[in-house]
Length: 157
Picture 1 (cartoon, rainbow, N blue to C red):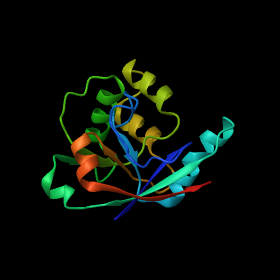
Picture 2: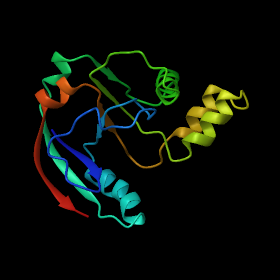
Picture 3: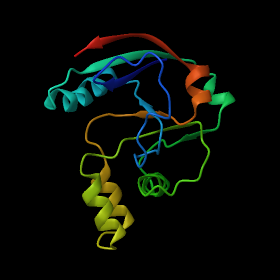
Picture 4: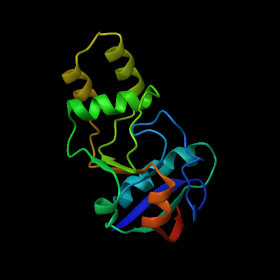
């Protein structure tokens, strides 16, 4: 499978230590199999006056059998609970890979409303659904990156 990562520079050797915490699936290296999604996400770098670069990787799908993997097939209560724990920095799981949908750009407002008890879980999930087809694969361990993700090249957007 081919995966893509958006950035302002080419990433030949990704690592977990340079990633931000408190994201949808926690600290990790985020990729997608959807090229258009990576290109769209490069726009944030271009708005900041930087170039957008999509790095391309070959993903060895044996990882699904060899590593600890959490997969969300749809937006669900379990997905929301996991995203909320990660965004609060309270995730204690040790998954190597987490696969699932992206929370939309209004996530912070929705999270605050949910945490404050102003909306219920069903409404939070409805608001967090991303309108366009999407998928993210988060590599949360260096072992997963080094063993199963192989750099193929990049393109400037």
